[in-house]
Amino acid sequence: MVRLSERRRAVAYLTGDYDISERRACSVLSMHRSSFRYSRRCRISSGDHQQVIARSEQYSYWGYRKLHELVRGDGHRIGREQVRLVRRREGLQVPVRVIKRRSPGASTKHIATATHPNHVWSYDFIFDRTEDARTLKCLTVVDEFTRMGLDIPLGRGFSSGQVIRTLADLMERWGPPECLRSDNGSEFIADRVRKWLKDNQIGTHYIDPGSPWQNPYNESFNSIFRITCLNRWLFLNQSEARVTIRDWLNEYNTVRPHGSLQGRTPIQFFKDWRSRNPGRTTMKLPKSLT
Image (cartoon, rainbow, N blue to C red; front, top):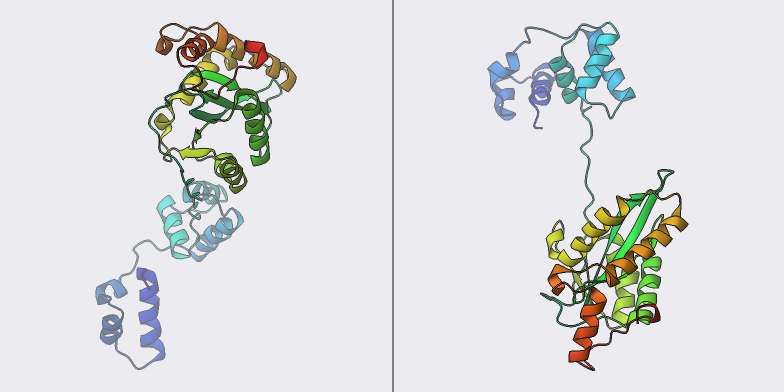
């Protein structure tokens, strides 16, 4: 027993039903006799008390402030603090929401920066809406060395199976990476995805929870994508979004110069690097970009 009210009831029970003195009962329950004898200067009427209990059971997820306004509206004269005390004494407080914490994914490779094309891919989700206010979920995939946006598939939602199909299609077009960097989203740490990556000998690097700065290349890509595409267009439906985003991605890879690439586009940077380092990468350009 922790609460003072519960100990007070226990002392009253011992002194009333058993031949035990008040002093002895208070000593056993570690309670001062002055606390046991304390009498509230302003007692709550039984009607107010029962109304607070009834309303609390009816609206179990309302806080004591809302319950106080409701009880006062019913014509009961009771203070807000008294409502709080009644609810606490009767165990009617709003249940504390328990946040379910997922275990972060286990990385198989720890890497600082990519050193060649197809060394590290990073992927993440970014959200938008169509005109009918329905969610649009885009999966952005970036090659960290060339800063190239590999693809942006989209849909109303993404399962782990859809993530696997997207990665398989990208690897067929661009060649397989050595490692994938991502956050701990449920689609990325799913057992099915991790098993598929392991079977294809692709390493994983999961950033620490709540640390987006550990995935800087994809975060930068998403920021540019948000400002220069998603914020500029209102999509009527998925088909229109898919066409617009495909055109934007082609412009990003072939037209937009990057300061981190000395003013070159990702495609120009990759071609220059490949000419200086023949045979050092498994990345291959799709026919649409050659």
